[in-house]
Length: 376
Image 1 (spheres, rainbow, N blue to C red):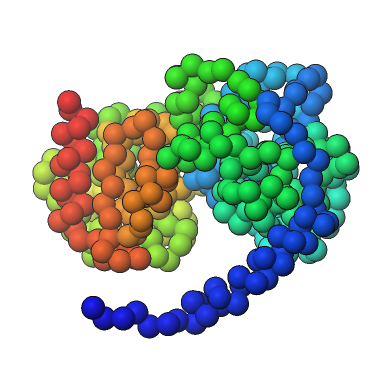
Image 2: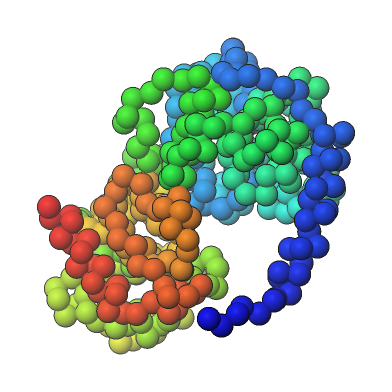
C-alpha cells in the first residue's frame, strides 16, 4: 500500500494541539459560564438568542426549532444571530422577533466586532442556544462575550472538555443523525418540550403573495405545476461546480425523454445560462431578482429538482420538493447528517472532493430512480 505523504496541513494540525489544550485551560479560568440544568425556565419576556451565524442551508434546518419554541413560549422574545447569506429566510418568519445580522468572521475575529457584541450584550439576553455544531470552543467564547452575568447557554453535546464554555450540553441532540433532528432535539431538551411528529417536518416561512407570484411566473414561462424539473446552476463554493458540458448533456437527456427543465441561478450565472440557452433555446430560466420566498414557492411547484449546492437542496427540502443532490465524496456519517429530510431524494456522490468528477450517466440514473420513487 502506498503511504500517504505528510502534508503541510498535517503539520499545522500537530502545532494546533497544544494551543487547543491551552485554550481549554484559559476557558476554565476566564470564560466559565453560569451552570444550569435542563430544562431551562422560560417566562414572559424571556430573551432567547439562537446563534445561526453561518449559511443558508444551516439556517433552514433550524426553522422547525424556532417555530416550536415560539409556539410553546409565545410571550418570550426570540432573537437570531445570523449572517447576510442566511438572513433573508427569516424576513417573513413570524417565529422570530429580532434578527441580528453580523459578519461571519465575528467567530474568528470577535475583537473586530466589539460594537455589535456590545449591542447584543446590552439586550441582557437570558438564554443563548448555540446551533453551530463546528468550532465549538470559538462559539463558546463568543457566547461568553455576548452574555450578561445571568445568561445561561445550551449547545449540542461535544464532549466534557467543552463544559467550560456552556451551561449545559444536549446529549439528546448529539444522538441524532440528521442535522434537522439535531437542531429540533436541541430545543426539545433545552426547554423540556413535548412535540408531535408533524412538528419535526421541514418548514418554509413565506406569504401568500410569494405563492401567487411564483404560480403566475410559472404560467408565464409556459410551464405546468409538477411537470417541470428545477435545475440549479448556482453554487457558493468552487468545489461544488458542475461543468457546463455536463449540464448540457443532462439537459439534452431531459428534453429527449420528454422532461421540461427550468433553470435556476443568480445574476452571476448569466453567462452560464446564456450558453445553455444558445444550444437549447426552449429552456427557460426563473427570473432574477425574486425574493427567496418566491423561489421556494416555485420549487414547491416543481416535479423534482437537481442541485450541486446544498443550500438549494435544503431550500427544496423545506418545501417538500424531491431532490437530486450532487455531492462531493464524504464520510457516511457526514453525508447522512446533511442529507435532505422527509422528502424523496437521491444523492450522487463524487469519486473525489469536487463535484466536477460526477459523471453524467450517474445523474441520469439518479433522475430515473427519483422519478420511480415519486410514482410509487
